[in-house]
Every structure is written in C-alpha cells, then in structure tokens.
Amino acid sequence: MSADPVRRRLLGALGASIGLTAAGLPIQLSAAGGRVVIVGGGFGGAAAARALRQLSPGLDVTLIEPSAVFRTCPFSNLYLGGLRDYGSLGHHYGYLQGPHGIRVVRATAVDVDVERRRVHLHDGGRVPYDRLILSPGIDMRWDALEGYDEAAAQRLPHAWKAGAQTRLLHRQLRAMDDGGLFVMVIPDNPYRCPPGPYERAAMVAHYCKRHKPKSKILLLDAKDGFSKQALFEQGWRDVYGDMIEWVGFSADGQVLRVDADERLAETAFGERHRAAVMNVIPPQQAGRIARQARVTDSSGWVPVKPETFESRQVPGIYVIGDAAVAAPMPKSAFCAHAQAGVTAAAVLASLANRPPPSPVWLNTCYSLIAPDYGISISGQYRLRDNAIAEVTGGISPLEAGPGLRQREADHARDWYHVMTTAIWGA
Amino acid sequence: MRKMVSFPSRRRRVFAAVLATPFLSTVMSVAAADPVPVTTLAYGCMGCHAAPAAEGSGIRTLAGRDADDLLAAMKEYRAPGGTASTSMHRVIGGYSDVELQALADHFAGQEP
Image (cartoon, rainbow over all chains, first blue to last red; front, top):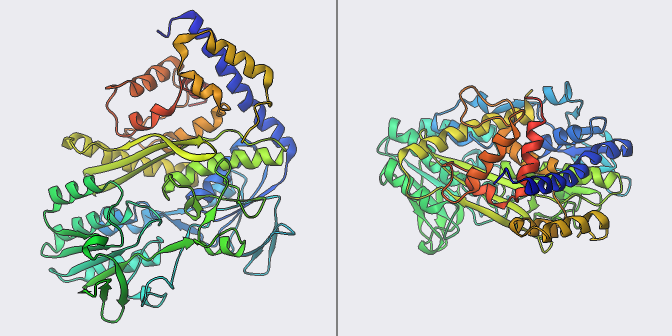
C-alpha cells in the first residue's frame, strides 16, 4: 500500500505542511530572544533546559538548582533492593553547562517577584527572566499525618525524594532482623509516582527473600486501588509468596497517626501496627517555590493551562512535572520529560508572540517486581476539548510468559540509561 | 484554543485533499485539529529512543535510519496483532499515517 503513488504524493504534501511549521519555528524564535529561567534540575527542569537550547540554540537559558548532583527517584527502589548502588542514581550538571550552553546557578530559589519578573535566591541574588519555568517537584505535607514531621522522618524515612532519606531507609532495612516487619504507609492520590510504593514493596521483598526470608512487608494504604494493581499482586504472589500483604482503605488500611519513637502506625479504626522498619510516604504538595510564586491553589498543587502548562494564576510562569495538575497524566519522570518538550516549544512561541504549537505527550512507567520481571504502563495524551485526554495506552498483559517480563525488565534498565543520558549526559 | 484562521489557505488545501481521498479517513481527526509539529512528535519518542542507547540495548536509536524501514516498523507496531513489544504497540495507536510519515522522514534526516 505504500507504493500507491497518489497516496505517496498526498502524504508528502501533508508531511511538508507539518514540516514547514516545525522548520519555520526555530529561525523566527532565535530572532525573538529572551531570557528563560528554569527552577529545578530534575527530569522536568533539566530536560526543559536541554529542549530550549535544542529548539533555539542561541537562547539565554538559566537553570537554578541547589544540588551539585541530582539523585533520581526512578531506580531508587532498585538501590533499596540491592540491584543498583547509590552512586548510579546520581547525575551532575557538567554537560548542561559546558557543551550545551546552559547557565547553571547553584542556589536555592526562595521567592519570585512576579511584578519585576525576578527570581530571588537564598544568597540575596536576583535572576531576571522573561519567561519562568518551575519544575520544583514535591514537598512533603508535614501537617497532614499526625506524628509525622521532619524530625519523625529521621526515624521513619519517607525516601520519596532520592538522597539522604533513601540511604537512611536502606540502612534501616539492612539493619533489620530476619523476621522483622517492614511497614509502608501509603497516601491517597495524587502523589509522586503512583506505582512507586508497590515497586518498592517488591524490591524490599527481593532483598528480604535473599537475606531475611522470615520477614514480612505490610502495606497500609489510604486508597482502595492502585496503578497496575492486578499485575503487582500477581507478581508479588508469584515471586514472593505471601511475604507482601496489602491492606486497602476499606480494610482499615488508612493510617491516621504515627509514633516515631515507638515505630507505630495507627489506622482509622484504631488498629496499631508496630514495625521493625517503617517507611512513611506522607501526603504531598508542589515544591515550595511554587507556593512562593503563588501558582498553587488550595489543593497544594499547580493548576495549569493544558496546552502550554502556563500557570492559570500567574502569566509568564510555566509549571511542569510532579507539581502541576496534569491528570490524567501521572506524576512520573517520563511525563515531566514529555511536558518539558511541549512547554519548551510553548515558551519559545510565546517569546515570539506566536500561538503555541499543538501538544502531544507520552508516558511509559516500568516497575520491577524482580531483576528479571518487569511490568509497565504507557499512554499517549493530547488535547481534547481543551483538556488533557489519554488517546491511547494500556498496561502489560496479565497473561504473559517469562520472556515478556524479562524484556520489560531489560527495557526498564535501557530506558533509565537513555533518559538520564539524554538529560544529564553527553 | 488555536484559531482556525491561522493558516486558512493551507487548511483548505489539506481538507480538500483529505476529502478527495476516502482511504485516508484516519487523517481526518488530525486535520481537524492543528497539526502537531514534527519536532514535538519526535520529542515524545526521545523519552526512550534518544541516542546513544546502551551497548546491547533492546531499544533502538532512530536517527539516520531508512525512512521506509522506520515507517514500516511503526505501522507494524500499530497493526492489530502486530509486532510484539513492551510499550510501542500501546502508545503508537494515537498517531495518524501523516504523523508516522513525518516522524519517519524526521528521524531519517538526522545524523546517527
């Protein structure tokens, strides 16, 4: 059918019309100029910096990020499971500064002066912008779960931002006695990385199966269902037997109070679970700078215009990644990367006083049940009636042989390598 | 929302061509909305396919590959019961023929 000459000509003509739009873009945009400042050097922010410079090589791009090394949440569960070392989670900003011409300012953005369009830094510095992209990730809500504050997190780690917290949980798990109870407290939606807690359960089980086989993993969940649930439950059962027990909201899984000294979690109906190691993933909100910039609403997250991810509340500020309300897109690293590309194009169009190009976003999230057992969820998202809609997608089949599970596990590792190299590497 | 008046003449040509070509009915839904620039389409693929892939990776790099081969492979992923894959067959359903052709040409024109 590809040999049909009429069809070929037509496809060529249509392709050319699409190509023209794209080809015309960078030339006119370079002429427009402007200063784009990005706050946050994670999957969203660092990818946005790269995408802006790729689309408009001369553009003035500044990335504000306090850490010298970014540690990824993706694959931090593999570190807990003993599949990766801690160093492999770290990525630095050298390539962004050098070959790619992005100015990286190692500082914490503490406020945004939206009138004068300047970002305030912790050291008193001021960074002016024409367009601002915030990719601040999440902050924990320290007021949302009784007994769980920053001090409590030093005993009951959340490990939901990769770094010192991840190491702490790793240490506690290694120090746990065989037969110990590992309790995970899981929040209601929305939160960072919907399948993350359940992959973590599998990775903790993988470690325990080899080193502490009498141990149990108890998941206390504030909701009645979760991402890829049937696949996770099948995988847990097949690989770890009854080591992992999940208790949903209706079965009294919602934890209302924790006691850090006693390592105790108390549910809505008053049942008390005492843990050897307790991982508390609390309710979350957009990172602090989003609240300072007044782009968050009463939910704690950031409402955005779906076609561009520009704030609905403050013009000229775009918010991508976990902080943004982008449902039905999940709060995933893959989505943050996808949003970075679309928003970079929208920011450039805005600087050139042009309407934003039509968006499309992709997502794929792999989760590991075991080193040779991966599952995934994927989706493609577009604008429908001025809202984000999933136009196609799905999850791994329940009926599948070990070959597919192995291939998905391999692809998870390939994905991590490609994505982190594309963003932070050469 | 984008205005329909942005590129009136091109839009009319596209519509006329599409209406005159019944076997390209899948293009209609895309032509009704503004086309997604190929750079945006291609950026989505980079979530997994950005070069360089790791040694022995099961995910192939797309840059510099033959356009016809790429198009055939993408259509095979999209066909019901087509090539077995982990994720491709789930995300590719949303692309029109026109978009797949644009992607194939785009990647074929890139330096490997």
